[in-house]
Length: 158
Length: 195
Image 1 (cartoon, each protein chain N blue to C red):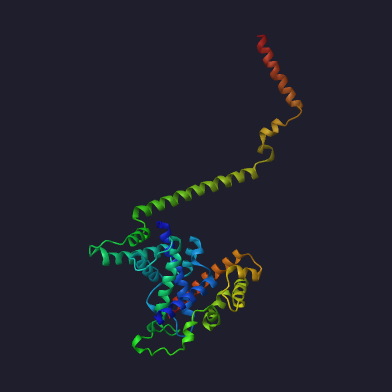
Image 2 (cartoon, rainbow over the protein chains, first blue to last red):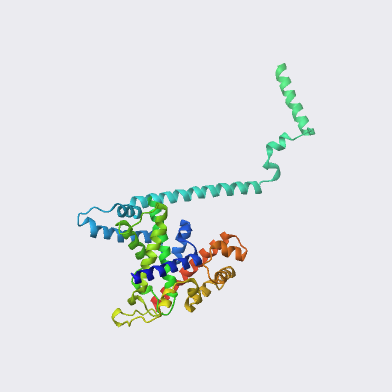
């Protein structure tokens, strides 16, 4: 009992020290957790597969081969940590590829729009506005209108 | 808990195991531990098995489960560390149980083993901290600030107020320090295994 208390005090002391130095693990986001595991040389997907295997072997050894019911929490944990099947992996690859293509197309659209807006000559960038804002007719415009009008009048006469 | 929460729980437990083993491995001449025979993932798996097979008496709300299992696993790690056969020399050489003489260290030493003050005064731990913060003034400042709280374990807001920075800045420094110490341990263990 004395030994147990001592262990508990040490564990408490270790917990407090870890929290003071590094903060609580539960406060970290999923990305933070993955990053810290990565710094320790642990890949999250491999970790999950490894722990699932340990739980799976334990379940087989202590329950399934003895034809005993697997406890609910163990069953749930096993299901949650089950590595993705080949079909699920393939689906994930397809999803990633689709996302990649979408993002590539979006980038291409944005870039080409940017490029057009900066490289086209000023007068062709807003042709409609240039036409609409024209206030006075030039001599060429007047000649053109006059010849058009004459064409219309002559066709009416004939 | 749903599937995603279980997967998150596993990662939280493993991060805790990494931190605890790293700190323990650096602390004191006789407490090096990579040779305990268990990886951080093993500790996490063991805890999930104990939980899954109803070996743990947990009666509180589901929200408290993560903190509870983290504590249970930390206890298990400390319990392993205290076994004579896993107290090894810093060179990484395992001392076999039957070759080991009884631990004659004073009680007080063992009790303060993982106390924050004791950790920060430990030469090996301090050296590792110094290496991890050498190129980062903000991290150095963070460690010095912790030391300034003589008798208490400072909360993030205490350190933030001492340094006059936002509390989120302290959270970021903590994360950075944890990653650096984790990386330091990983690099060290690879170097030792190659030697």
